[in-house]
Amino acid sequence: MSKRAIGGAAVPPWGLAVAAMLSVQLGSALSVDLIPVVGAAGTAWLRLSVGALIFLAVARPPLRAVRRRDVPVLLALGVATGLMTIAFLAAIERIPLGTAVAIEFLGPLTVASLRSHSARALLWPALALVGVVLLTDPWQGQVDLAGIGFACLAAAGWAAYILLTQRVGDRFTGIGTLSLTVPVAALTAAVVGIPQAAGQLTFGVLATAVAVAVLMPVLPFILELLALRRMTSAAFGTLMALEPAFGVLLGLLVLHQQPSLIQFVGITLVVLAGAAAQRGGRRHPLTTDQAGTSADLDLVG
Image 1: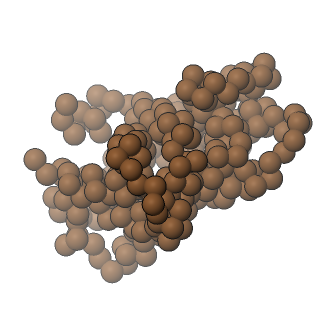
Image 2 (image 1 turned 90 degrees about the horizontal axis):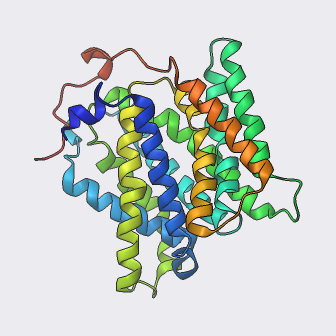
């Protein structure tokens, strides 16, 4: 399949976003077994490092197209990605996957709420918020404050990631910039990740890291970048309401984390909110001037 078919009219932007979410949650579920061996930061560093190597191998870094004013945005996106990844993995080490994703979703929910331009548009984030509360299930049993805190930090990183990714996607064409931002994310995670993973890098650990790196960050980052070029950040952020549902589902299927009946009600609410948000969420195609560059940033080969 050609890149045009993936990013063009053949696949709607909401379809790209949904595929990205499924890949993220499967990668997260499979990372749970890796975290006890190399730590949350070590897992983040391995995933991002492998992802960086993949992007460098298949994509042409757009160094000649990068202008001085682009550098802070690219660096900020890389750092936000690294911190978000560490925080989320630290969260799922302590609390169920679906709960962590539900709390993390508050980041894109805030983006959607702040960027909405009509009172009616706020209905969907409000509905999603109710679903997130039900999925979080805060009234049941003991509360792991550390896990919730890490999930909240991941939420802030996710909000920043959405806004920065859209700026990068508007500035450049293609996915070549990921070969710049993902290495920055890997270096960010390396500060804590290398000490955690030191002495534990067996062949099995590295093989698992390669597998989860393909699921996250490689596939989702490509798909999200393409989706954000054709959707408003508000629509994209609200569509991410589907993420807690996928988190609960894959938590059940892969990690055997059984959701309660009320959490199923929450899933229904966030799915309805996400489905409603994607309607009318397309962006008008950017002109060449708006894109900011005509450099060839396509995949090599």
